[in-house]
Image (cartoon, rainbow, N blue to C red; front, side, top):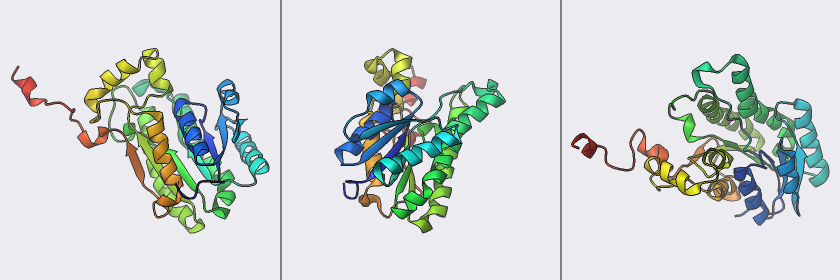
Length: 258
């Protein structure tokens, strides 16, 4: 894709399974990447040619500033922010005030503080931001409040950022993955991809969960010159999940006649 080679990206949450796929995709297009994560073991394991690691907790403004400064010193520029990092903390209706604040701090506020710290660099290079929404932002999900609400807020944040940063040449978009073979799916199933696909099948037209690499491909497009006239929007990499609404990808009416 045009406009990626020689650029520099910061990827908060880059040590996760989806983050690693984004990093690998960037490197395949000649982008230098700084991975930011609280998982120092996984982050350090990613260090290679063109990939650096900077420990960073998005709840800490000093660490965010240090991340931006370290990236500028290492590479001399910042072109892309890809906000993969998120919290899955969620106790639904029983979530405490502290839990709400924790979720919103990681999932929304941290990325805003990073944008503020990198804004001048992004403007100088006419850069791009890609936020991570979710299919959870558009539907009610039993027992889940914090994650869906924060993801819905991210989509509104994306529109607001796109409007106010357009004059500086900064594009802001989002991707909303469906069920994806990610850290959380791996943990919940004990590494059983086949089971994950089987459970996901009725909710996705493609009959499976997505691969992290498929989400990363959408991120590459949004950062590239091919998306030069795209800002303030959201690409649903969801295998048809949201196209079905409350339906499943198998007939329901026959169930009434059984």
